[in-house]
Image (cartoon, rainbow, N blue to C red; front, side, top):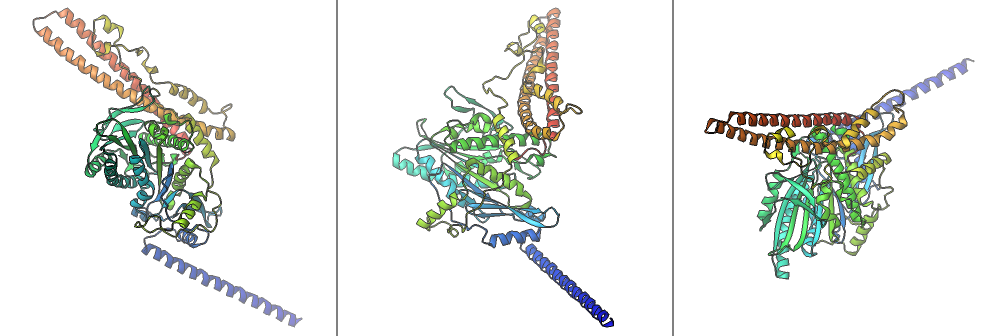
Length: 639
């Protein structure tokens, strides 16, 4: 009995000692892991890579693993109707200070976004890798010259030698991703190559070619000439279907230096504002058009359009913006949706191109409908982990333009490299051109709800001013002034009904105001169930974009009315001066003086009343936009 107890006590003691040894071992291992982690974090800081050390290690191990695709060399494809490129910029010092880190891997032609996430326990970390494949992907060590050489330079040669060709280069992406930096570099390379090619063209054809440059921006649905003191421009379509930007200044460039100076002038005059993401964000679409015409005739040799699109933002990132920034963001995202549909139609050789869906696509109609047209789209992305969702939105936008099959471009590049291992001698050496060891599975995860919302938006986008030929109304005098013989500028009636000025410019807004009351109701019959809320999301975003579009049109009408009132008041003031001179001179008909002065004062009161009514209605529209913005915030995607 005692032996059994002694044996049991020994077993219990040995078990305790084993547990103690295991606990000590775990503690030593944990201390070792903490020490290694601290050393790794210190090394990262010394290398200028602060931030989450675990996620950075996971990303580094992925890049070193066999799971990562093998990088291939860039191949210049001279026959692509549409070429889509991705450029990843270096991590910025501002992002480093915020402890951000690189979470994007570019291995041409594939780009992988490592979305760093936590599992449901809130502790375990993992990477959600989204892979995309394009014609070219350029990492942070690639220069703007590399991007120009492989994607844009073939377009310059195409415009000069194809005869009446149209070429368009777009740079787009989230604000602060490096679009403007890339486009300005491309503009410089275009200027240098263009005159060299035109010299060869003149020697070959025996005639000189003029280089005519125009530079304008589309800001808030309005066109402004960047080379002519930001003068307002009108976009019209003539009877032959040609889109004309009236009063647009074209300046002839006769040398590389002149072309550089013209483009630099336009870049300086572009509209920029501070946003949540960028202190100097481009808030307009800047369009630089270089037209090549034969000297002494109107024959068009070709046209090259270099377009730096405005920086996009998600609706959730605009919550703290003022109204102007919100309206800019809504207009920018709408025009990008319209642009995507037009480029897709161009790529699929569709007979219908929806270029009237926005002012941007309208002015580029010639680039979409001409049979000899080519397009390059450069998607600029930020490498920061905090911008991963922005980057994924940008890449999804690019991917949906061509809906390309994953692995297709990689196979083409591998075949071309096998046939010619060094296709561009003298250029920067490319990376290993062997094909990937395994095909990528799945291009990316798709958000079905976002696609439905975007399709509805694309189908319902309309211009704020559907008839660009519509003359802006001037305001005729009332019958009382006419009866007293008033002959001022407003006596030229044009059909504007001054009796009820509040109705001017309403249209959809009045209907939306009634619908607002219906949707904002509560209690029985208000449809507050979950199913109704899901169905309402699309309608909320759609109505918000329509409100913004109508608000731009109302703003235009208010400004035009204000200008007309100022002009007419100035003329009335001049007439008052003449009236005083007459009554103080030889003509001292005091009855005629009193009658005319009464008519002038009454007309002034009528003008103030008209302007006040217009202003009151506009302020109600602003309040409606504010209300809809709060309800739609967070339900809008970047594109």
